Length: 293
Image (cartoon, rainbow, N blue to C red; front, top):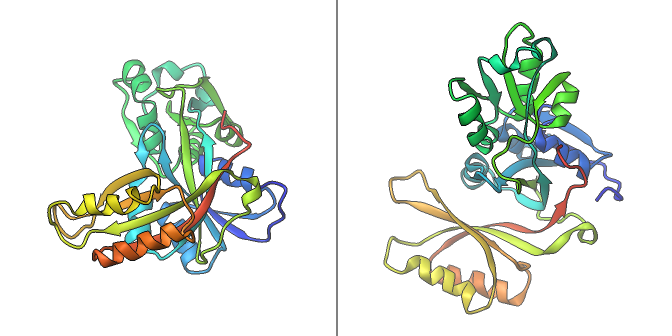
């Protein structure tokens, strides 16, 4: 997508040098990027028309879905996915340069909860006695460490954050598993799509489905709607409806275009079954050129 000229304001989970920033900047290098402190702030910015698009994290290969993104899209906002970005994630331990000789005696580690979880084994075996502090993003953690040179504390984040905030990387690649990628949604108020020619793979459609009643076989019926039509599901996940224990909605990714006849037929059959279906639209996946090393 770097070959395409855009004239959009794009909100992202910041501050600058967060993983979301890296994915957004690599995909939209010529756009006006607007940092937001939280995921809801990003989503509200595009829902209220303050920006044209918003980029938010959706799922990490090691730690699973970002529940705040899923729940906010279901309960609070009516938006569409115009594209999905895929970014390689590499986590490093970094300290203020004033503390680079004391880093083995750090008194606290700061980062986004997903980043801390991705480095669980390293932090447990290397710094089991050190308290972990959650921040809104990895870049926010790096910024905090840079602003507190008198404190022997560390941040977990990417190399771009270390460079941006003048930190020293003292341990590289501390994530627990080599294959560490994160999916990001590009959100819009309009059901449109980013240019397909620069994408990877086939079209994907995301649905949020609520079953009609808590009856035996209800989920099986829903899955059968897709199965007999040979529509391939790449993901299915349940999330609480927040109406009581045992009440859930299901997020389903289907590897097909919602305009295809079989998909239209599936939506009609789901409606006939009494399901409530919220479509986030059809989109394509884009591999970012930057690696957060």
